Length: 393
Image (tube, rainbow, N blue to C red; front, side, top):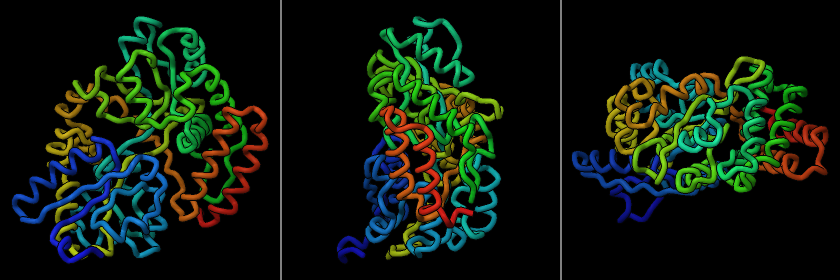
């Protein structure tokens, strides 16, 4: 797998944000002092984390952070080792019992577990209380209609609303708003999306496109969060994958507060599950040591201790319930817990990797370029689902 002189160290692949890299490096440095084995964590941009083929990573790394839509492919490709093979049943039971929303279950496939949910996330709302209070003097919107009203009022203000709508996140926003409107029946395995809810989601996004900060069009959540916390141009974001880092004192110039995503007629917070799972490469030459480190990272003591202290966003429920962790993050975890319980789990079959890319571009065109109608967008959405997601049953 690697040159012989490199085989004495573990290599891990994260994504390029302090939320991911800082806790992993802190824990690994501590572990290395007792194990005697160095650990190197590399990082890739968020776009690569969302799209990069797993087979490219399993060849060069012992530990890999994966997105749950990769699980179906990972389980059938023999590129990663089932978690059941390197942890005790009682350990897995603790992980399942303390799952935040469907985080644990999102890495389950064909009766086996394929990653440990060390980081839990979903789309939530974000606000600069100082800006929204001074410009609006009101509470956060509870519905998407209220979101549109606020965005319209802020349109000509110095402090605007924004929403990340690059292709991948336009797709996730569509799923979130559709789920908000129709609940579980919005999009079920083997079924087409609920058309009234899908049209509603596209109409909300098309309306917002003309009202939100122009940065929205090509941004992901990291770019929006960075811009919002460094400048005074964005006061409110109704939907983005939450990064607790930005709720911490001193992380950026301005601190954000995160809250539950808007609700709809389904009485469900519309949101898509994010977060990451820690997987063990089947190509690793240091399986025993890699498994030992992975088990340590996911324990409740580490998750609510050094992992959270180093700026991580834990996946274990004990950390989400911790008063100390919430105090350090402006209440991030307690303020968004209801939303992650409702989060939609994207299809996890192999074809979803290509589907997400193509459908994201399709939905983004529909939102911003009016010549692509909602009807035509949904017709092509259905065709791509039939072609690429046939195994999703």
